[in-house]
Structures are given as C-alpha cells and as structure tokens.
Amino acid sequence: MRITNRIAAMAALAISLVLAAPHAEAQSGPLRIVIDQGVIEPLPFAAPDFIAENPQSADMAAAITSVVAADLAGTGLFREIGPEAFISRITSFDAPVAFADWKAINAQALVTGSVSVGTDGRINVKFRLFDVFSDSQLGEGLQFGGGAGDWRRIAHKVADQVYSRITGESGYFDSRVVYVSESGPKDARLKRLAVMDYDGANVQYLTDSSTIVLAPRFSPTGDRVLFTSFETGFPRIKLLDIATVTSRPLADLSGNMTFAPRFSPDGATVVFSVEQGGNTDIYTMQLGSGQSQQLTNAPSIETAPSFSPDGSQIVFESDRSGSQQLYVMSAGGGEPTRISFGEGRYGTPVWSPRGDLVAFTKQNAGRFHIGVMRTDGSEERLLTASFLDEGPTWAPNGRVIMFTRESPGAAGGAQLYSVDITGRNLRAVPTEGAASDPAWSPLQP
Image (cartoon, rainbow, N blue to C red; front, top):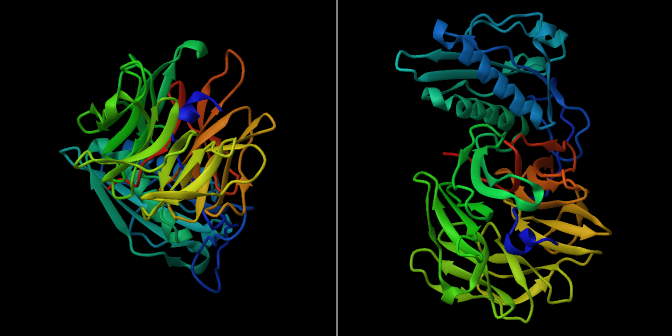
C-alpha cells in the first residue's frame, strides 16, 4: 500500500442499515422512504422553480431550486421530474396545490418555495413539502435567511429538510469536505489543502503548494483541520484554524516523525502515529495541556487510528501479524483485538458515525477496494473495486462514502468519488483538477 496510506489515516464510512427502495404509502400513511434494503426505484419528485417574490430575486430563485433538486437527485434515492412534464404551474407560494395534476405525472413528492432579496442583499427562502398521493403537507413550512453569499448553504439546508422528512434520517448536504488539491505532472505533484462544499462548489485553498501536505481531518465542530506536513523535510502534524487560515505544529515529541492524526469525538484529544527508530506506535495528546500518552508498544507499524463515536475505543491498522490488518483497542491503550481476517491487506480504518461499522481500504489480488465490516470484523462487504481506491470518509449521516480513486498510467490522476453504503450510486465528485485524501465535515451550524 502506498505511502499515503502509511502516513495518513484515511477517513471513514459505514452503516448498519441499507438504503431501501422508496415507496409512497398513499393510503396507509405519510410519504416515506423505508431504509432496509437496496435501492431499486428512486422516488419521483417535482421541484418547480421557487417563486421570486421581487424582481431582484428571479435568478436567485432559479439557482436555489436547481441546487435543491440536484442534492436530492444526487442521492440516488430520488428522481426529479422535469418541468416539461408539469401540468400545473406554481404561481404563488400560498396558492392551493392541484394534487390531481401532480398525481397525473406520478410525482410522489412536491417541493415548493419562494425567494425574496432585500435591498441590503439579504435573502429569505421559504419552502413546503407535500405528499402528493395523500393530498397533504409533510411537516410545517420553514424559512431560512442569510446574506447573498449564503444562497447555496440555504439551498442545501432546504434539501436536508426534504431528505430528512421523507427518509427519517438526518441530511448531509449542508456540509463541507477538506481534501488535498493536486496539480502538475503525476511524478511531481504539487499539493495544497482545499475545502469545498460537499458537491464541489465554493472551493477555498487553505495552504500553498510549497510543501507536501497529506491527510487533512476536520474537528468535530468543523472549524479546525489536522493535517500532515512535510515542511521540515519529514512528516509532522499541524493544526489549522479555518477562519484565520493559520496553522501551527501540534507537537514536537523529540523531533520524531508524527502523522496520521485524527480528533477525538469531543475535539479535546488527538490520536496519531509516531515513528522512532524504525518503529511506529500510536499516541494521544490532550490539546489543552499538550500532554501525550503512548498507547501501543510493539515491534511493528501501528498507524491510521480512529476513535469510536463514543470515544471509548480506537480502531487502527497494524502489521504485527505479518501483514496489514485491523485491530481495536481501548482508548486508553491495552491489548488490541484483531478484527480483519479476510484475504489481502487492510488499512485506513474509520469508525462509522453510528458506531456499528468500520470502513477500510482493502488490497487483494491486484485490486483496491473500499469496504465496511461490523466492529467485530463480521459481515465484511466490499463496495468498490478499481486500480486504486483508498481513504474512505463518512458523510455526517453515515449514508454516503467519499474516497480517492486513482487511474493508472502516466496520464492518470487522483479523483474524488462518492458511493452509498449499498455500493450503488457511484459518482465522481467535481473538483478543480486532481484531488485526494477527502475528509467530510460535520453538518454546518
């Protein structure tokens, strides 16, 4: 497995339930996507352009509607019915809905909304969600407001509400992804940290390309990022504040190489790897006091640690058995338990946000895979397969996985992909050039 796997704890995925075939319970209950099996037929929905409440909001209304529809359709759970099929037209946010016209085109969910832009540039968005076949509104109407630059976030928040009301799960659209942006020839890549919306929009660069950077990881509050820097010529962990775009070294630890960092669930502790004398062990450090603790002490390479959501355990990779495998130990250290026993090598484990699965990268028979297993190692499932797939990271709701896929050959490059936890809906994530090492943020406040 290449050096990025050794130096970076690549991110997480997993989930206990499996996304289901959506269906509308028109007679027996409200519209609902039941999540218990593989997706077969996406739920058809209509999202007519939101009403522009004043002339200056016309373009904004169309743009917000487009983002809401793209968020929902991009999950693979929903299928948008285009405006060319519409019989009814939404001309007022408060006008009664002609449910029969929407039933006629088989729209099971209807999203309506309105947008107004004030003289100060602030925008206000209202929306409603309707269960077409039961002739009823799902939940109360809501409204979101913000500055002109917040329009995409507001659209994502609307889509999160629609997603949540139909699936019963929390959404993930109003989130960000930090990653390594790559440029230049494949054998001499320049790398810098970047952060973007989950769908590739609103890119912001956090570092320049003067030094190699790897494995960025969000804090639980989404305002800080841990990453590995080669600024001094060897790997060293740094902590970056996103608001100020300033960073500082995390720890010296007598000049030893430090890498593969990740926050604890409460954000107060960092777990990472330290290489000294050819041996690599796992340490933790309290951010407040700077106090460190060594958790492993074995003549092997222990790296890529990840906390369980409750902070009580750590999963990591180790070659103590002779090949890369996955182990779980107490967050305070102690004898670990091996959980991977399939063919091939396992690395970059990350605990599911729900706590029931561990995601990993697997290399076997010349192919790389993104997979998930129970925390005891049972029920292993491989979700992808390619020349090189690695470094999974969880969406905030645990339903979608993002990872790096690299194509072979001199012209090949690294690209971000996402896939749902059934292994369906594999999609390339748009980025400005090559990209790798994604890490998903929590939902934004």
